[in-house]
Figure 1 (cartoon, helix red, strand yellow):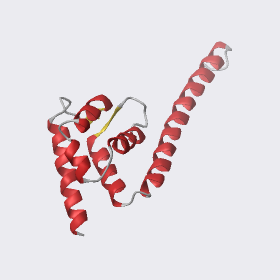
Figure 2: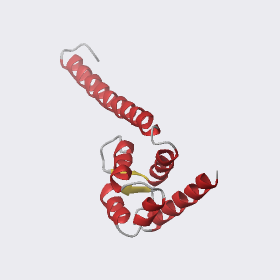
Figure 3: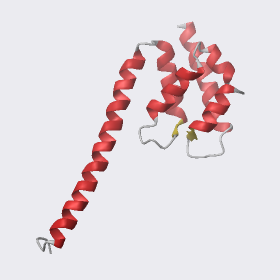
Length: 128
């Protein structure tokens, strides 16, 4: 439990550092800025958590379900804490985020199909 408390404090300090080093005020951070911070001023947080930079960036990529190269700082640090707690959780997290990504794509596709179907029916005179 001491290790969990120590890791929690480390993650909270990392969250604070990422938030204060980020010009955005919406709680999100770009992948580029995150990578820069994690490889320089925030590198010691990853070391303290026994996590590699690549594992942290993979976690960020999983959270970026809309493919914008941005993500929530809070979700990212919570993901790191879960990854640290039990590395096998990464498989469950991967499945969850892949599912979320697929659902977003299905939702976008559904909107496109509905819009085009409505347009087609309107052109054919089926809709008022």
